[in-house]
Length: 354
Image (cartoon, rainbow, N blue to C red; front, side, top):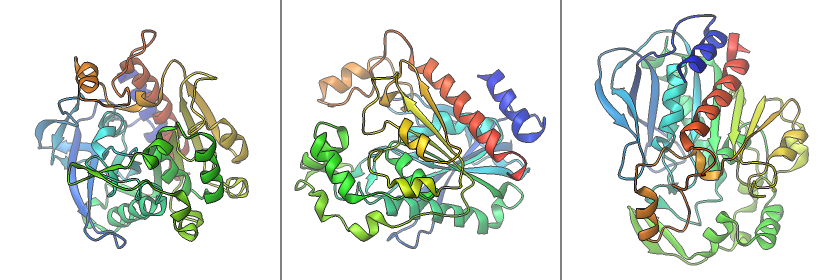
């Protein structure tokens, strides 16, 4: 990974040596006008000095990454990458890729999206993509107005990285618009897909407790909000990993996107779920790129699992194989390729203020 990061650094910073740079982490509270309280935002960045060593994202299931809590940020006008996590996760669930990008010379900031994060997730909140894009725009507002980040973040170079439902938000903040009728038709045709099962499951999570909720009728969603444009013109590039709502985007909105998009699907041809299959999205979006990560699956983007986690999750009744390992390829190897692909996309499209 070090050699990959060194190459990314050369592309990004004209040879400045950030590969292997210590990474700092802070947790910020950033005001979001559409929310009832400030967003909890985790930010990773090239560190200059100080800080307390810790393992970010470590828990009983997943391995974390070594960082320096509250270290002083390095000076350098680094590009800013906004993170949008998957449904039912948190920003720390992307700590492995955020740390790698910070080592390569990016500042990476991810909010925990209320209503669709770990321990705070309901079917009713899940399709409200406009709330996620508003979160991302609020984080961008915070970094461009807070004097503490002046001379650290370059407001003229901003990217967004989204996974799964976060990929949907990343697409929409770049200019894509979704059709509610198309999304309803998708769940009618593919009721076994994870998101469609979630809507019918009758359960949710509030304050880290499981609750019973009525099944969600997608026809009850606010059509105007669901189909509105959520574009933020300050976004210069978007990287989308297995973006949700893949069958629901309006082709005309894709054709009008002038922000460079890089689509990445996890899996080999014929094995990628229709819910996130993005090859046609890439062909409909001017200048977009498309890559597949062979012998991976949707859960490969999650952090590395600790030994015994798969058995523990099965024992407690977790329905999804979030710690499943392919006999053909380890998650660590898949992560290394993802660091390469994602890092190269941002280095190429955010270089020199383009």
